[in-house]
Amino acid sequence: MHDNFYSLLYPLTMVLMMIFAFIIMSLPVSTYPTEAFARTSSITGTTASSSCKCIVFRMDDIQDDWLNSAQVAVMNLFLSKNQSLSLGSIMHIVGNDSKIVDKVKEGFHKGLFELDLHGWDHINYTQLNENQQRDSLSKANAKMERLFGAKSVVSIPPYDVFNNDTIKAMGQLGIKIISSGPAEEDSFDQNRTIFVANGSRATTTTTITHDNNKGSINKSATIYHLPATIFFKFFDNNKWVKTPLKDIIGNVTRNIARYGYGVIVLHPQDFAKSVNATTFSNSIDQKEVLDLSKLIDFFVSNNIRIMSFDQVTKYGTAVS
Image (cartoon, rainbow, N blue to C red):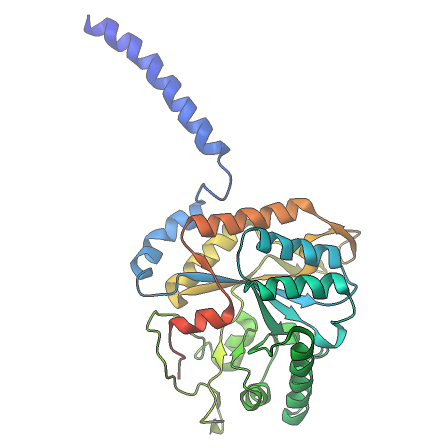
């Protein structure tokens, strides 16, 4: 009798296992944690109660009349999911394209879009002196206020490059957050001033602007450094290369464990159909938008909050 029982049970067990495997493999990225996340989830779990455990989506190069269908498609995606998006606008060339301006206004008035400066012009700010940088950022912020009714507290330097003059100019203008790139932060001071969202919610912070040769720059200004941690696509060997979603998830997870947050950078061309390696049409690449949607859903389903830069700075202290 036992033999008959087991002979019936075995094929039934095999069928159930096959059904379970099929279900797991068919789950989308948003509900099926990748290996990268699984490897480090235990690390983030230990810091969840003491850190922000959050992520910023930063979209650079917002401007008039350039791939505006792709720009709006990304904005609409975040609006549809009621999630935050930080927009880096090149202010000299923003304001005449109603498709862009109206969509930015919609998201800003809903409290979802953060208004960030991506320069007055898309130039290397380190080639300007302190006064020139200050005047350029001041002009950019004046236009930001004129267009959208509010000044920005975030600067995303074009090409991610900045120097001590950038920091001094920002401090004088009340722009308190800089988001550059990981390599640029390392070159600046070996990452010593990267903001840590450790959950302390401190109301006072120490000055983090400094010069390795001259010491403290401005005792009254605190500049929070929240650099990009990974790019949705990156430029390599004269072409744009997509970062695999599992690598993005792994990067964010590691940075949450270390700093309490991650920053993913998007560009309009990431979501436009390509003509060749460096040229794009004003047509939306729906597959890329879908992958971004899966990425957002994944983080939300894993209780990683999507925030603005300014919101993240409420969760910790600056590093002196």
